[in-house]
Length: 286
Ligand code: PZK
Image 1 (cartoon, rainbow, N blue to C red):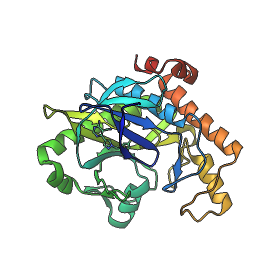
Image 2 (cartoon, protein in one colour; image 1 turned 90 degrees about the vertical axis):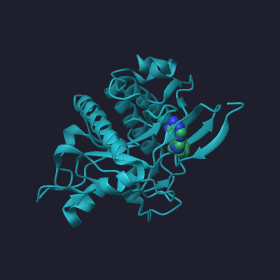
Image 3 (cartoon, rainbow, N blue to C red; image 1 turned 180 degrees about the vertical axis):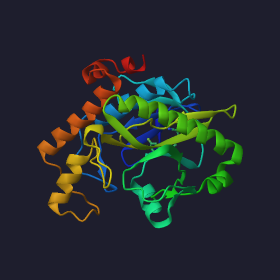
């Protein structure tokens, strides 16, 4: 990291430039809930997310090229190709939740997709839908129609990222379902390489970029428990915190339970022990 230049901060990640062609994405152990980063970290969370992204990048290469060059031995740092990022978030929803549910309830549509009447919160959709959003610098992404997205990236480019996003989601959601995890929705980011080719970038199908639900507890008609963050949310609700900065410190049992859930998601999805990943992160790419 001696000559890595810091070029960006996310809520829980840092971005460094290694040279003109390469970036280093470092996933911290910070956790956010209700849009606030908490003062307590979840040990190894960044390694779990980095390993899961590596796993999905390796397994989706036949669908789309990606930015991954290498995983560092620390298990939390990804060397990646530096791209020109598209100015849209490519969200795919297989279930009706979050802003998708909100928009459906008020308009019957999500991002210009008219959906059947009388759907319930968390219902599975007959087919996954592509629901792009703008990247708001202020944090809160805003859903846009495919027409609006086409104005930002061009109709041809949009059609291609829609096709790729649906294919990536279908591959991952089918795999996860066999592991007892529902991927309700996920957000992809794409960039363009020097030759103008589309490249799958950022993080891949992690619990931070997706809604993971435990399949054995799935019960449509209301909100679902989060596979990873439910202990944190329950604790925050019990404290009566008003969900503005600063958030509460987490007690040791909530930290340990949450860490165990992240590791459980990793081990179920990769069918690999997390200790094997820690000993050599590149094993997840095989
Ligand atoms: C890129 N972000 C999001 C912000 C983070 C991550 N391969 C790439 N090439 C060029 N730019 C990016 C990527 C990727 N991935 C990703 N912003 C730019 C972001 C802050 C911290 F860790």
